[in-house]
Image 1 (cartoon, one colour):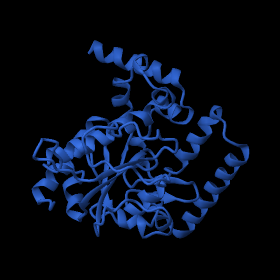
Image 2 (cartoon, rainbow, N blue to C red; image 1 turned 30 degrees about the vertical axis):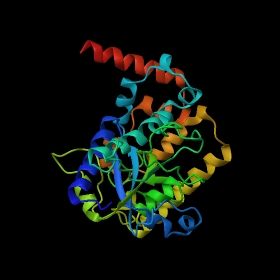
Image 3 (cartoon, rainbow, N blue to C red; image 1 turned 60 degrees about the horizontal axis):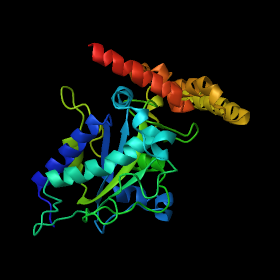
Image 4 (cartoon, rainbow, N blue to C red; image 1 turned 90 degrees about the horizontal axis):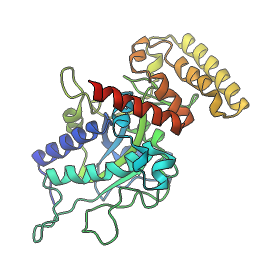
Amino acid sequence: MAVTPEQKRIFLTSFRDSLQKLGLDVVHPFAAQSFNATEIGQQNPMHTFNQTSTLSFVIGNNKTFWETFLAQYYPSKFETEGEKKDPMDYYCERLIPGVTLQALKDAGLYSDKEGEEVTTAFSVAFSHWKANVPPAGTPPPGSKPTGFVPPPTKTLPIQRVAHAAGLAHLNRLAYLSIHPIFGPWFAMRSIVMVDLPYDTLDNEILLVKDGGVQAGTFSTDSKPLEFNPGFRDLSPEQIEERNAVQEATKNALLAKGWDARDWKEWVAFRQSLTIDRPDWQQWRYSDNQMRYHYRKDSELLAECALKFQQEQQQQ
């Protein structure tokens, strides 16, 4: 079915608003074909649903996700091993497909009413390599058709996708994605592909503006960021010096090998990428959020959640 501009607007705003409530403030639209045109994309393409420019999104979060997640974290209610093993990944895997379907429903692009059935194909892939199969948010067997299409069989390299999509610059030396506003202080959770046409007007609808909704995208055209925004104010000579220091630090860390007990050293390396962008400091993760990010310490997460929930109850 042909989508109207109003249906598109409703879908985009419903999608963004629902994701923001989940703590997922990064909602970046782009055309799947921008990744598929790359060398790695040709080998492992995203779904296009036969569109010439397929509406897709990279979904992620900045530091604000931490408190939103803590507020709903109750490990005593976990029923599956997936929830216990990595509750953040499971949280995203469980909820993002449903949010996508609901936004399509809000826009009149999905209906399961008898005699009025409408479906719009969509697919959700996740950044974590060990996603549940099928993903936790997959409609159960025997349910009414939803348009859900399984993601590509090979995990999409989300950092490469985000680079091609213009969300963040992939610092290949550090192998960290650098966002023009958040720097290295953000995380990417999933890639959503929808059987709708992409247009730069989608960016305008989802553009984060002063005084507006603080979720969406900061890009007006989703063109790749070929230049590292961390080096925005540096001369070529200074950039060369920074790269040399970063490479030496990275090589020393890799030679030492990964040990979760050394998480502070990895944080320091990440922090070093922001040395010339003090404006990024406001987006730095809290110490506890950082510690969990690197160590995946379930006891720490439970302690932080309990403390946060108690503080909220006292307000």
